[in-house]
Image 1 (cartoon, rainbow, N blue to C red):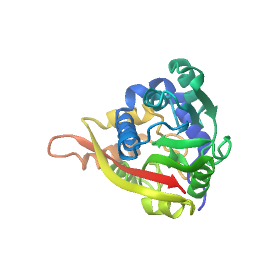
Image 2 (image 1 turned 180 degrees about the vertical axis):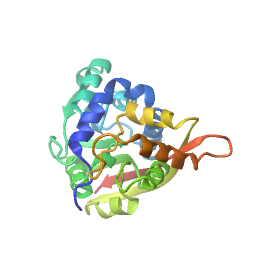
Image 3 (image 1 turned 60 degrees about the vertical axis):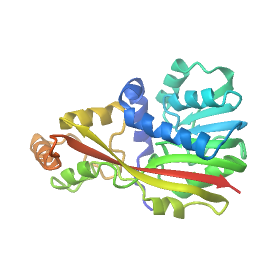
Length: 266
């Protein structure tokens, strides 16, 4: 597979969005809390010795994990240094938490150092799923679990289809299918559960959606995007095309395809 996602843009965009992320990320928090329930209720993980919050962002769920598992050592890891700086200054979790800047596809962690890997809406920014899951397997202890939430290719399809009427550039992030993710799993990671759901948000005006995407740093990270400013005529055509999705209640929908993947290392 050729390069699809520009990781430097991912790091820079989320670093820049760190101050506004928590105020805009209602959907992301909801999905993360669903993932926490799967970890504590479905898997009944009680006292893990160490937890890796992979793609920890502002540290919101690192803090949640610390509250649920106060005796566990936590590592909050993210590729965006700005997110980590925000986490360090806003999450006062003491020496039980280590904040680490690193790439999920090449984790700067010791092998078998984590009994749990928790990752909510982060691994969709990884290009090489085989490298990602190989690293998750490497850092997991035998019998350890990985509890993951990510986004699928139907995410923001309305945005993608509206832009497709204007030009042939990639304006919207393209994510991998569940089949592709499962195909990338190493032999020592067994699937405990795989689920998918569609979440649909509603907006009165298109600018509310685009402002929210900017506020959480979820700009277009794909290679092949349009360069420079988009002309007013094309923007007008894009807005007109998106209006075709307005529902009978007068709202503009934005769809998110959410995957939950629970894995256990043999």
